Amino acid sequence: MTINCNQNLVDLSQPKVMGILNITPDSFFDGGKYKNEKDILSQTEKMLIEGATFIDVGAYSSRPGAAHISEQEELHRIIPIIELLVSYFPNIIISTDTFRSSVARETILAGAAIINDISGGKMDNNMFSTVAELQVPYILMHMQGTPQNMQQKPTYNNIPKELISFFAEQLYKLKQLKVNDVIIDVGFGFGKTLDHNYDLLKNLSLFKNLEVPILTGVSRKSMLYKLLNTSAKQALNATSVANTIALLNGTNILRVHDVKEAIEAVKIVEKIN
Image (cartoon, rainbow, N blue to C red; front, side, top):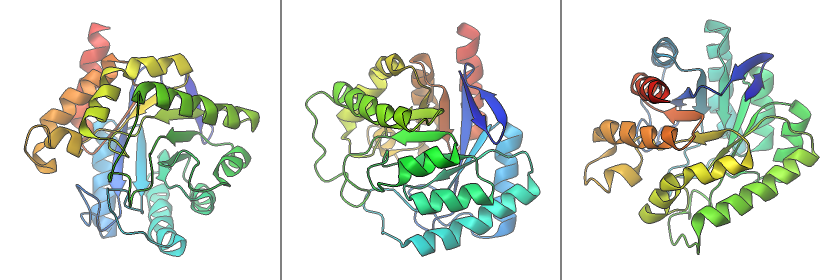
């Protein structure tokens, strides 16, 4: 199970870790933390040294109720950062967290290698054709609604079944366009209640039937800290527990704020497997 990232073949048969680099002022956990070049380079270097295979760069906050920003603002935030990272870390594999095809295109031209789309192609009709043209790996995530309204009243009859149906349909469209490398992400916290999230975590292994790699992003999310009555800042241990469950259920990539702890979870699960 490999994906082609800038002519580098990455083997996902052993789980990999994706480090999160938010350059938004209002992300739920680390918003505004990495504001200057020194902080951005330092955090990226730390994640790479700790074992991250990918660095996911996002300039549009997708936390529930986040403010909508223009395409121009998103590009203004993200392009200089990608160029900076590529110049300092020539072998870095950057994933761009965007739902806009124009931003996807510009970031790939600037040196990114993967597109991570929270909308699964639903918020920009040109996304699939753009990814097909660029021939880059694509992370297809499920979200009910938009970041602005997704947590108002998420409703499903059978969430694993409905998401498998969604992915099957979108994967078929991507296959018709000859997009070779697709990774799915069930979208924990994106238009899901607490119970929906745990139903998905429990049944994550069902998604292996789609025969594509699975990415899981539960790092410090409210599904963890609300259940435990704590906060995102105190949710590292809970994140490690949830990541371990995800790995045991077949996850190929963990998307996290804390790389070292995720790598430890991977090593332990690999050992018992």
